[in-house]
Amino acid sequence: MDTVTKPLFVALIVAVAGFGFVTAMVLTQDQPLEAQADEVALENTKITVTVRDSMGGVTDQKTGQNAVVNTGDNCIAKMLWHDPTTAGDQTCEGATNDPWRYFCLDQDAQVLVVDKDLRNPSASAGLSGCQKAEITWNQNSTGSTDALSKVDVQLAYTFTNTGADDEICSVGTFNGSSQATRSMMSKGNFTGGCVTVTTSSTLEVLYDFEYGGGTVP
Image (cartoon, rainbow, N blue to C red; front, side):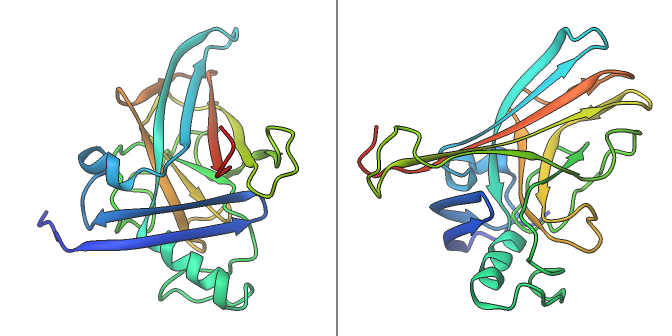
């Protein structure tokens, strides 16, 4: 694949029903997350995936970082300046009246800023389809009432594999359960490679976001 090296200067501001962060980054189009992690990965974010067997024992655990893709940038603009119920597929597919809290599992580890959908979605029963994560919102994590106090957000969902063994290599976030009618905001892969989820095993996905707190340690 040819690489477009013209940098894209992106300032991102998101505040959508508990899914929020403010960051700035420089993206080089068509580059994998692994090749430019310092530029693409969002600051103060972490993905943790934990695989447990049918008895609850941990068989694998990996962490990684999350990156906003071009479609996510476009959806941010649409949320800020357009009617959230407006559909359309030119810059941001579907309406933007749902939060980006749906986890979708991919068997492909690549994270490219031009991706609109997952590259190879899991087809195994229990792992296929996008599932809405639970949210834990801690608006003043230090107990301070200062306007600059830090905010912590965690998104969490546990998948149960009821089908064949499957290899999961990355997680995308969407604002609906259908990739076909909604847009991908971001995607993240795992340091150390993919994880194998065998039949009857579970895969817990945690996205941790920390933002704000200009004067809070």
